[in-house]
Image (cartoon, rainbow, N blue to C red; front, side, top):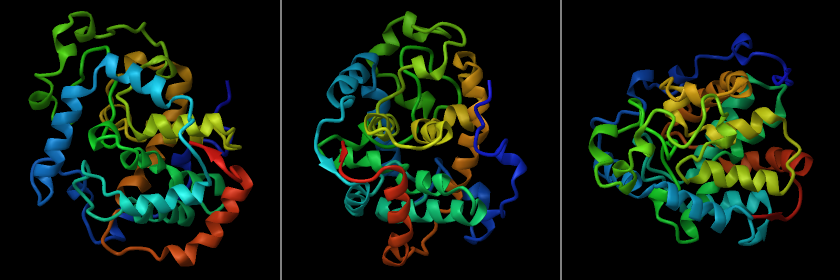
Length: 286
């Protein structure tokens, strides 16, 4: 099965050590132990880990899976992110629209020949517009994890935030495989509900003309316990493992391009509008 259809393993492609460009050491990113935003971050995860249950996730799939809220262009959705500041992120305290351009421009510099990858960077957090539709941030942002099976060690704040989650009382949901089968594939796993799954559904609903790598990047870029923590491999199938290097590559830019030096969207919009027109033009269903 050949799934890396856009040029092979991304680790073979040269890219700069981007975390040094921002003047911030790599180890200082995703610091969940201390920092000026830590109270806000912890409270967001506490609410997430208390309320994200199998029942809750299924309800959100029914509510948003059909992408029938409204119609708008991708760039109109991007403009809405001007009003969203991610309360789960310990690294930034500015609107998500700037982070979108930081990520996409980092990818563009390292992978100039992969314009689909540039667009994936721009749109990866567009699902956070759910926070403007009335969803609490704990149901939109932050790291994702599978519900319906044992919470693995690398899930952030694992030891201090799950005790009031009703699913913790169900022995089936607290076994290694839970409601799943070995190597069932992430396609068949219920992830905690958030912007990743929602945007993936938008992409599918509107038939985005992007390679499978882009769909994986969007759907699982917040699944840190998998792509960074190395957990939940027992649920993965062959395709998941083939796509993992691309998700890891995407994460490099999603995380390490964050800095206080903000881009100028007006100077970049024309280029990305061209990509939108190529891969996902017109009014889309959200």
